[in-house]
Image 1 (cartoon, rainbow, N blue to C red):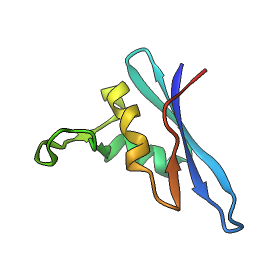
Image 2 (image 1 turned 120 degrees about the vertical axis):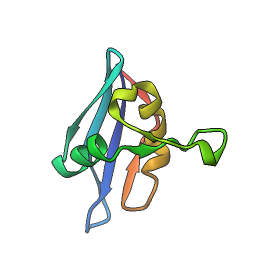
Image 3 (image 1 turned 30 degrees about the vertical axis):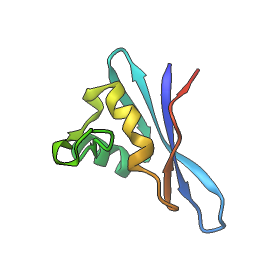
Length: 88
């Protein structure tokens, strides 16, 4: 299964896993911190990999692998960080 983990910076400087999004069939299922999962499902993330920035659109878990591929670009701050796609 392909998946991406999202980590959150803690007050003590450590990181804790808050959300895991995995590819099941052709859709993404996200589990973890409810506020982040709800935001992903309702607001989506930008398609940072679009060739032209004017062509960017929002991606949602229903967009499958394309959504998973863009999580690392959407969450790349010091506070929230997503891994590259991993496989188990």
